Image (cartoon, rainbow, N blue to C red; front, side, top):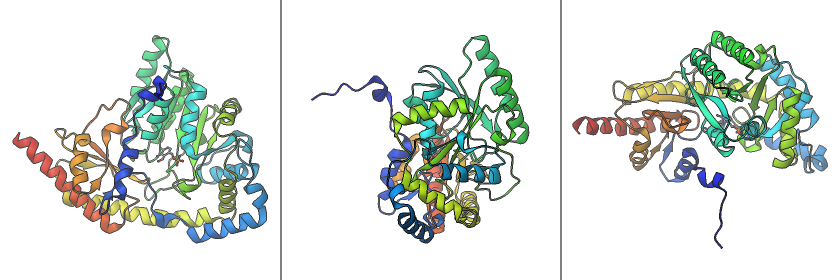
Length: 404
Ligand SMILES: Cc1ncc(COP(=O)(O)O)c(C=O)c1O
């Protein structure tokens, strides 16, 4: 039978990361591609004990359908956690537990925008958010960012332009802390400016913060949701980077107008939130494992960030630059403008090293000489060896474009 698929699905392309994941199992491949936590960050023994405890004490409920928003106990613990870690004042009624924050990224454009309408993002932005916007046929307008975060002066002029044309964006999507892919953190001054613009133009903000708790250096900057006076910031959190992505637990915090609409959509998306994962995450929080585990993860990742930076200094050709993030999981590397990092991936894979090209993170693929390098997943020897291989690939390419 010939299927006539929807034009929407025919128009979607696989994400470069999903494609690259195929190569990670090739023997000898060193991958800086995916955004994967290091397996050493998982509290496996504790989780084994927690699963046993959950099944013994609450097996009947943990294996049953649960509520659409996620169980009350977990939402209460999440409210406590975001108060302690991000200074966000919220109530369980304002929280919906999602299947990772990726589900929230898919649900929000469906709830807040019609196909063809525009959402503002940073440029570059998270590849999974680009997929979610594309899957909703929502247009993206990328605002450039620098080491101080999204350029809010550019945002202001774009909002003014869009207002004049009668087509204000539906919301502003930002990853203000340890941005993916760039690793930058938005300054307090720009955060205030962003919130002022949101209020002045009546455009809500969606703050995605999977990495906020993974700070290795520098001073904490308050989350947008904690600074918000208007109640129009929707906050996305996840346990993927600080507990385990395997449980697929994320959450949305928002005002009741948005929460009730997301709840309606979620009834169609998955009916009920994963009860077993929810019980495990709840017990993990109640036992305070997160608070004990995060300092260990920070220690581990700080060392890996420093190692990757010193390896880049040693092996990358002069003129290359990279971010030096205070947290998160990625370095954003820029090589000579004559090099197209998307085309270079093939040569890198031949040398058994993988990365994600910068172009994949731009809503319209506009910049071509960046690479996103994940420093958390690989072991130290792989970081040294992989960056040495990649440095050789980049240097050879530079030589060949110069000769040509
Ligand atoms: C910025 C950002 N948002 C959302 C996600 C989705 O994470 P998850 O669905 O595992 O919670 C990621 C994962 O890498 C991310 O980097």
